[in-house]
Every structure is written in structure tokens, then in C-alpha cells.
Length: 292
Image (spheres, rainbow, N blue to C red):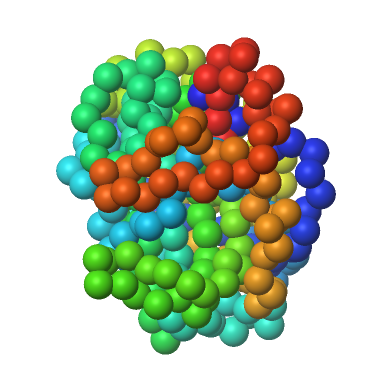
């Protein structure tokens, strides 16, 4: 699995500020001082930032829930994600959805793509919550692992106007933002030494060599992490503010290429959306099972 940012134009820009807090790894973790924001994080507030590719591992039908771990082992990560508009006014009742790989670099619904055998319920490390009146959505997960060609990262979408469904998911609405969240290389290096991350057999790509992250710091999704304890295994808490323009994305904004092999789906029947074939994605697959 490897990802490629491609050269498709950015259809819309959003406001993004990232402040994330982190806690320790079962080795020596970075001190309780913020570990990842090069530049003044506050300067990123209300700064227009390009969106990031959705990638090939998105599944429709995510559950609306605050804890997306499904019992997955890993360094705890608690996120408080705040959604604001271009005037920095909080947006309530927006659905913030995230998805990411587990400690071994496997996505639910696609287990095996990073070379590890494990059970696949189709829903682990996927889901989202509605923001409160202050624009805040709290989500509990684990620190993401890595897979071939990519650094550790989390995918995020912001939807408005959704309708909650009886099966615990959502439908309708508009997608206002698609992005990715990134982590300090120092913190990720510490996490990589802790079980089960240490069992990941794939060579880790550092942040500086990632094909999607552009080195833009907080304005490009780099989280500010603060350790909660004396070791990385203690976990991380974090805050992140996403500012959106309020205009729905166009189909072109969400990477118009096939997201899965035919028939891939999670256990809830959430099937990956189909798009026309892409020469870029086909090239990646021929090189080595790739993804974003």
C-alpha cells in the first residue's frame, strides 16, 4: 500500500489550524512540551490551506460514535476536533469523520494490504461524531501505524447537514473538507518502538519523505502533540481546529479514482465507492499494493 498525492488541482481551499496533544510511548517519550508545531500554531488560525487527497481506503457508512478503537491495541490518542467557519466562528452539529490504519498499518475493510494477517471487522478505526454548540467533536482512537510509502497519518472529513440513521451511521449532507492529519517525527519514532507498533514489518517512511505532506506545518495538518505521561505508551490527547469555507466540495475535490478492488467492503456492507480507473493508481498497484 502506498499513497500518492497526484497532481490534480485543488478544487477548494479551507481554513485549517492544528493543535494536537500527545502522551507517551512504552519507551521514552518526548517531554510534556508541545512536540510538533514548527512556527507559531496560532498563526495558522484562519489561514487558507489546501485540502489533502481522500485516498483509496475510504468506506461509506461509517458509524457515528466517539470511540472508534473496536478494541484495537495501540497508544491511546484522544482528539478534540473543533470546526469553525472562515470567520473562525464555531460550527455546531457538523460531523467530523476520521479513518486510519492500525498499529500494523492495516485499514479495516482492507486487512492484508500491508502484509499482516489479522481479523477484519470492517469498522475498526473508522467513525465520527457531531460537534457540540462550541464546534467541538471528541474522538477516542489509537496512534496510527504506517504502511508502505506513507508516514503515520489520519484521514479526516467534515460534513454538514447529515441525517443520522437507525443503524448508527449517517446519510446525506455536504462534505466541506477532506484532509489528513500528520504527526511529529520525534513522537512517531518513539511510538514505533512500542508494541504492537514494533511488530510492523514494513519500513517506516519518515514525515519528511512522505508523498502527501508538503512541509507546511500546522497549515498542512501537522498536529501539535504533548505527552501525557513519562512514556509514549501512556497515550496522547490532542486538539485540532479545522476551519472550512462553508461551500460543499465538488466531485473533483475528492480524488476521482477507484478506491478499492471490486467487491471490497466492511462487515456492515459499506462498499468502497467506485470511480473511473486511474493510470496513476494502476501504476502504484503494479509497483507494490499502494494506497494513500
